[in-house]
Amino acid sequence: MSRGTPDIDDDDRKILREVQKDTNRSLERIATKVGLSKTTVWNRLQRMMQNGTILRQAAILDPRKIGLRETFFVSIRTSAHDAAWLDAFRAAIEEMPEITEAHRLAGTTDYILKVQVESTEAFDAFYKTLVSRVAIYDVSSSLSMEEMKHALELKV
Amino acid sequence: MSRGTPDIDDDDRKILREVQKDTNRSLERIATKVGLSKTTVWNRLQRMMQNGTILRQAAILDPRKIGLRETFFVSIRTSAHDAAWLDAFRAAIEEMPEITEAHRLAGTTDYILKVQVESTEAFDAFYKTLVSRVAIYDVSSSLSMEEMKHALELKV
DNA sequence: CTTGAAAAACATGCCGC
DNA sequence: GCGGCATGTTTTTCAAG
Image (cartoon, rainbow over all chains, first blue to last red; front, side, top):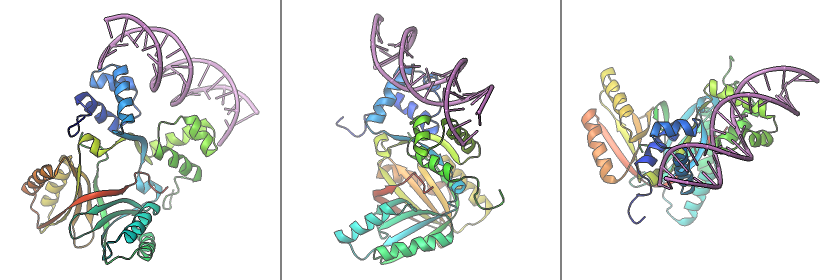
């Protein structure tokens, strides 16, 4: 385990491609599809859950069906780069469920947030709360008109 | 079913909160936790899978463990707004597995892409392929230094 | 909506290769 | 490491309150 990522081999990749699509198929179907025995597939799945390759198995919901109709992308620049500010920012991200994704970036934009809310009014409320919690130098919010792709299946 | 989203009630929401976390717990544990019978939980899950509230149940992988070490956000502006260009762009998005998310935006930026690749070199190759496939007026790519949050669990 | 029970499908662990 | 088989668990279906 000294190099980049030699934890998984081609059989593992085949299994991952299957379980990324659907976890509700039986072991037997997966085993047949990838050309290994049930036991082997089971052992490999066990290992990949242990070592964190598979983070978890979960139901993936349609945001619209549960009332989250709008997605915004929020680009943030800050003037404060001290530890106290970052702690406050991290806490806000953690505690606000509307923020479904947050990245610290290299470049002119310091942070990007993906925010999923019920409505544009709900976003306005979210926005006010956010800027009241942390000092922000410059913000630019973009409303998504259309989600063209959302691949939870990674290229494995 | 004439209003916004009255397909799901509070019991459904409780069930969804459970299965969003982990799909591998038995029906019995979920039923106990939400205070309903096994049969009821099963019937409700069945309905929510039928009507698309639950898109699917799948394994969620750690991108780094499968060698996808870098995430980029690509902001795109285009000068061509005709149907032919859009078709080509849609096809490119569909066919390039490195693009894990794509949105059409309102505002100065026309599109935003999330791109997950093995390395910065792999991103360079991806980028060249993308711009060779579709005419783009202005692109700005930002490398993510840190994924601060990635909530696949939606606020339900 | 619930309980309960019965059938089928399944995951899991052990065996020998 | 692998595959086949035995066992206990779980899902799934059904009848009845």
